[in-house]
Length: 370
Image 1 (tube, rainbow, N blue to C red):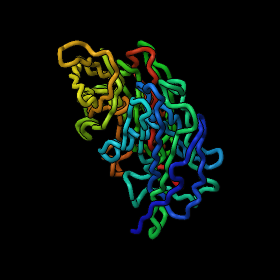
Image 2: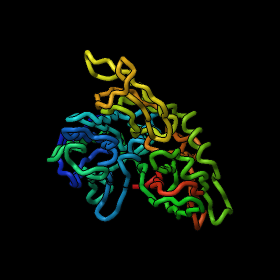
Image 3: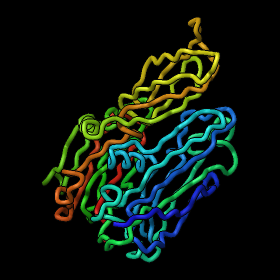
Image 4: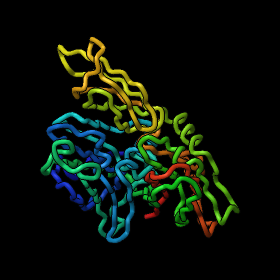
């Protein structure tokens, strides 16, 4: 098999709310599209504000038909759950610092999958669309992303050109998004058109574990005639940790005194770091780390609390990246294990709510013929 990297755009500058659009007019099958987005922080700092937040939508469309529809949070999480490796994530709070995230939209089970890949020639006008919102968390300025057009995007198509085009690809789409309440069931209708390889649940609220927002997840066919699974979210998360291990990434903070900072991992976050202050040694004391948060204090060598924000370089590790929980059907690499819903008239995800005010999203990965 011969492969090549087709650079769709290299470091293309985008406006604060632009939707980047690129025709996928290649003649070869595409195994994946590597996306890298970076932007520059303001002159003061940029706390708790990641590239994952400002890339709000990633789509592959064919005219009005949506073939792929993900957030950057979901893309990065699926990258991890497909490869077992943390994607290239470099969050930073430093004044004037550059944040850079890189993850791949896989059209197959993995890169260079010969069975599943996207064939642009099977569609009339396939396009990649990436939507930005620099002010999703905080307005651009001194304590957010810097003002001005400084979002930079690189897109690379991973193609192979000496094999027949596969007759299907793996389609990843957001099915629903809602705000949770303190209790009760939320029932979500799922499509019954294509075979499922995976579902991805994202219950997100800083300060809450994923299972404190959604306690149970059930999949039911024709009102419980067949139940593929009915599990505690806490156990599903444990399954994922046992299978894939922890995420590990570099995370730069800009903090002083006593603080609560946001982490990219939700469960059992553990942050270890040091200050970049030559001649001014400081001691970082973490006093609590849980539920997407890192609580710490900064002391001078005399034991006094130092309220001056300083550059901290840290390693973050934990699991449930971006508060996500994957649910695979059988063996992820074996299509014969996956769930075909076409025998059923109704397919529902039933979520038992346990915490109010969270954003809850559910994504599906299905086999899409082409």
